[in-house]
Length: 113
Image (cartoon, rainbow, N blue to C red; front, side, top):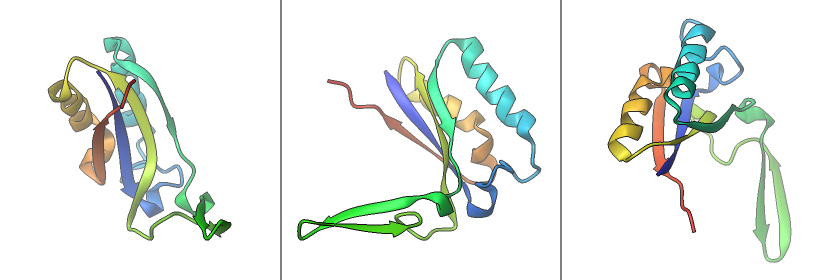
């Protein structure tokens, strides 16, 4: 099964500083471990939520706003797509995610046809 691991980080850290200690090495090691295990299928870091544009359709008209959909202390900073046997294995990878120590990590199965 494929799962998306979403990295929610404090908004101030979504600008590229990545973790409480600015430790890019932790992210590199985590990503490399998934590649080495053969479970990595993709992923990307995202620019800060301040660069987002939100679109809604209201009464047939497009309503466009600068910024993220919600105002929150944490924001989606990036994601990984992995392919593993089951949710338990996906949760094991999520627990190793650097964001789990200072933000939150959400795991969600990918819907396939």
